[in-house]
Amino acid sequence: MHIHLISAFLLSPLDSLHALSTRLLYALFASTTFLSPSSPSSSSTTLNPAAAKGQYVLGLGVADVTGPVVETNMMGYASLDQTDTGLHMRQRVRAFIVAEPPSSADGDSGVGAGTQRILLLNADIAMGDTGVRRALLSALAEEFGNETYHAGNVAFVGTHQHSGAGGYLENLLPQLTSLGLHRQSFDAIVEGSVRAVRRAHASLAPGSLSFGVGRVEDGSRNRSPTAYLANPAEERARYANNGGDGGDQEWDMSLLRFEGTESGEDGRGFLSFFAVHGTSIYENNTLVSGDNKGMAAYLYESSIEPNAMPGNTTYVAGFVQSAVGDTSPNTLGAFCESPGQPYDGLPCVANSSTCGGAAQQCHGRGPAFSSDAYGFASNVVIGQRQADAARAVLHGGETATARVQGGVRSAHAYVDMTRYDFALANGTRVRTCPAAMGYSFAGGTTDGPGAFDFVQGDNKTSQNPFWELVKKFVTPAPPAEQIACQHPKPILLNVGFAHDPYEWSPSTVDAQILRVGNFGMPIFCACELTTMAGRRIREAVRAELISSGILGEDAHVVVAGPANAYAHYITTREEYEVQRYEGASTLYG
Image (cartoon, rainbow, N blue to C red; front, side, top):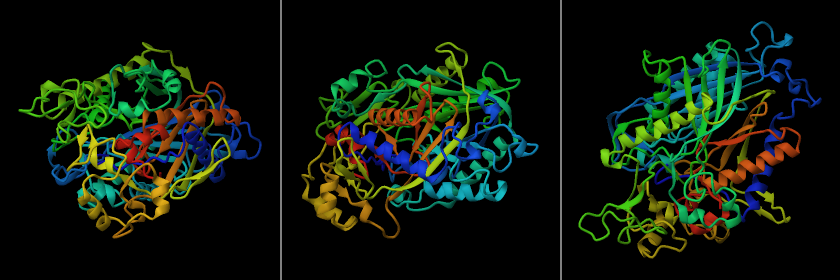
């Protein structure tokens, strides 16, 4: 989000993410059955013969989640001045159900309670939320029973757009500029999500899945390249051709195609995974919108069913957020907007993203920057690039799609991140800490600069003694143990110790994995992963699942988020040292 509140829990270089990912996997395995379909330990894990042949029961649905479009503070940029005044485009949620086909024990439909299934909801909102998800699961249990859609098999993901109504989150910190809960926003998201699931459930029908990878050329830019360059050179070299400047972005788009028995070239719909911030539309905008991923979905769905009203198509296009942390849709770069100054129009100072020593005049520019002052034209460009990449995969223009075969499984666990203990590869025991935000968090990003005299890349205490005084009245002073655990991040907001009037940040977060055959994993993270952090987690999880015999060598793993809750950012340890916005927004040390 923007004065962004995101978390990352990195502790030591390179192997820390691998160790933490492995430990979290063990927690997932302990919480639920997530075994190889060939495992004899439970009849529930016996591979369904039809699923083994790539036959599934699929459902897709879309519904509206637009809340109040006037007189409500907007969610994402955390700006008190950004109160909505109207509508650019409606926010929607898209539901995707994958279930194993009926067996003799399932009765006639094979889609009732007890059937192995997963449900992914992709909503045009800033992020998933614990309270919203809890209310959604309660409503689904009331309508479909406790065993059909539940905490273990439902993932709720936000596209991370920054131009929707706020006031729906459970923790105080991201709610501050919204001035608390707005029931209309909250209810619109919950009720719209239930409608989408209802429509997807009603559309359940036999089908198949296939997987492919495309490329979104110039679809994003790294907004913290100096932090990315802190990662080891040999590691960066492995990704030199992945996108951006020397591989500092992932331009690959992973896509899962939903095919019906009589669907055409485009199938019934798809889920795509590509990382780009939902900040094409700038902070000066006050019209509610779905930003670039909402636009991409609209463009694709309307191209398939041009005579249908938006949001009423049977074709459903899912553009899911991936390792979004350090990405930006403002692909031209960040420049000084400083009329009358000699540096006006020049690139911002790289390390600090400042102009004349301040962050406020440093702004990223989208691909159609000169077309309008709000980013609407650039929003269409970035949305169209994602839609075109998806179409290329579906039509075979980039890579051939491979059929997905195998069982449907899910795993979910709640993890206390305040003191999560695990071992590194060298045997050292380390742990996370209660949440805290650093000074550079208040510096903002090139997509939306912060306020006052805060800047990015600041790993020292404030040079302004005023903030040292003020911060003691905002959150409790951090004890020595907390300061050491969060080092080298200087603590601005000690939110893990702030509990009044309610919790400022989450202490317990969701860890979740969904699996469909060899399309291993959407790994759902309650945070914004940076590009390299996403790679490390993805590779660590894939390696562990293959070595455990759960997936084969052909497995494909993706990451998605922010999902289910909001715990700010995750960076690599090396990026954390630099303390740009993403590192300072790493909650747990």
